[in-house]
Length: 204
Image (cartoon, rainbow, N blue to C red; front, top):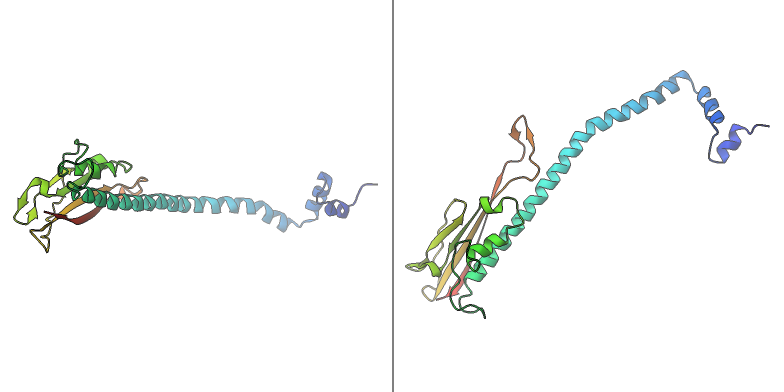
């Protein structure tokens, strides 16, 4: 005797004959709805995929912006600290030079080295160094820029000058989104210019 549909269902499976019988039991309306549900799912996926792709691209871009901001802040802080060390370092016999970038022990080279992991950092980064090593204009150290051309900044006078000199490093980096998004040739995320400056006191 052939097992009943109920016995197959209790075992957690239906034979091909059982599935065929169950399909015949359904009304024509139910069968049409089951056929249309597959097409409806495809339409929902087609509608949602561009939105999900856009959200993923935005997540990558904004994550890169945060990484760039952290690296620029660290670059300005480390290079300024190095510029005020003077003779304090065990291997230093003179005040660290401001630049150029090709000089490995310069302040500008140290700032650029911290940004090597960023995209196009060598062509879109400007480092301005204001240090006593370049000379003094009264109580304010002279400044020099290295890398890409950009805005120049003027350091302030130390409140306890001339006993102390307020040295400064400005790092400016133009951030290009790693995933460029545009709508009819209009960028959805423009390039952003990040600027960080750190000032530290050096004893004259």
